[in-house]
Image (cartoon, rainbow, N blue to C red):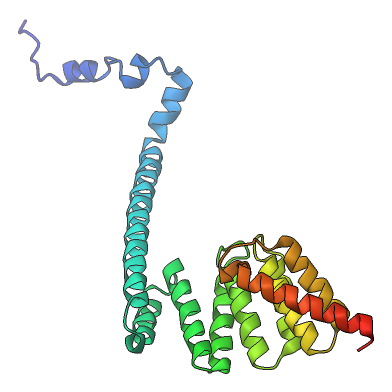
Length: 240
């Protein structure tokens, strides 16, 4: 009888039926779980591939956003340090290229301030409103926005609206003195002496004795508030 050939069909069938322990068995995965994983291995690999792809896309997007923010900040700095006659155009470039970034928002605020400085109140208010729609309620730019809007409204003669904006400004930590000083001035301009006195007193009680214009402090501002308060109280005492 001839020896069995290695290529004999029955011999091949027997070889294929021999169980070779796989990785799942070596890892001591329960048989039921291993069988389930083998059954759905195509779906599992597809899911894993999607997770890896999502991670790669997120990493690339995060790197893109970081690079974009750095470029936007650099462009804003260049615009802010540009000569006065070129500053508006450079700010417009920042807004055009990086309008969705914090630098783009700051550029809009600067454009609004430039419009305010040249007396274009309507343009300033329009730009401030654009910023208002695009920043979050907890943005650190909110106090500057409120102050800009209040100043523009005051210059436009919209006193009631300006006073409301100053009241909103006073709710931000550190900006109360600036708002109370402005409210005292506006109440005084409307002959509302009692309210003006109240605002000046709040200012003097809270304002630092030295500081910048942004917080309403400084000896000059305190001296002015003290003088106005003294005059208002004197006028009230004499019945004027």
